[in-house]
Length: 400
Image (cartoon, rainbow, N blue to C red):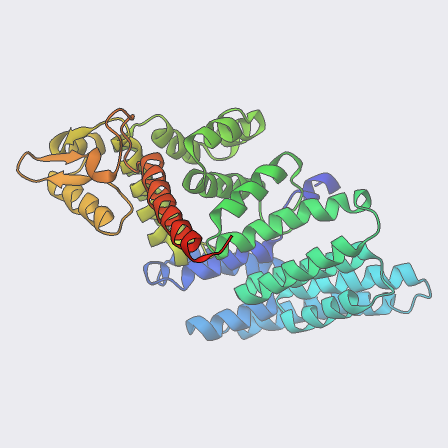
């Protein structure tokens, strides 16, 4: 395999983290195929610490012969790395430190990896690029451990380090990588607008394969963008983005289908795709904590998009559009109305949803489910009247 191909591969220990997370879920706990895939990666890469920790976590019986063999292979590699430390050349020593850091990450000895990365990062005699790479490694270690708080801390550290460097142009590569790392952190904290903005910026020049594959970058861009961007922004930033469209066709056609089922108003197909997306999010270590929120907000977005085209719509018609029952639609819309997220009302007698004056819209205004402009106008008038009354009272007591 060529060096260029190796540079575009995500390390096995990063991919192992995703499989291990699945094994912690009830529905995959007894999945033999997933377990075998997990153990095959461990055996192939001699991941002793990952193997020991997994056996302890999942109550698996340790294969002592396999463990001995893997440890022996690791000792040989470590001896070679340590013998290289005797070199008198400073650059060679720093390169060996980076190799040892990668080695400990690969076998799962994250404590030693953290110590080495910290020593490189805190050594101010190192160049900015070397220190930043060490900080990125610390982020990956926290990502493996699913420590969101420390992931955020490392993003702040990297940002400060890059900003303190004298030339903005010299750190372009680091800044570009930082966008991907920060986007991953934003996904874990449910900051979808920021994640979408960062991912859209870095897709054409993506090179952070050490953190995640390009395919996942494309998928995360769709997931974060479709929930956080307006229809006009989606049109300009997604539909007119040739690079993203090509990536969707080649890397993630299923996500492209999900995206366009909503954009093209195929709501029944969208609900089917959303059900598939829900299963994907439930097994995703970054987004599992947010999958209920995500699915609920996407249903809301679909309802709002449909209702914008009508002043009134029959419940039966809306149920047919989404491929569900009238009772389901009525209950869903009622919940969103009660929470203030849909500004409309249900006429139970007529069996209709009304999206006009009750939501604060003007009669001459185009109907909209949220009626943002009408509500803003009414609030402005109310606040303006209150302000004029206060100014009038103030004028009565001030002696000009």
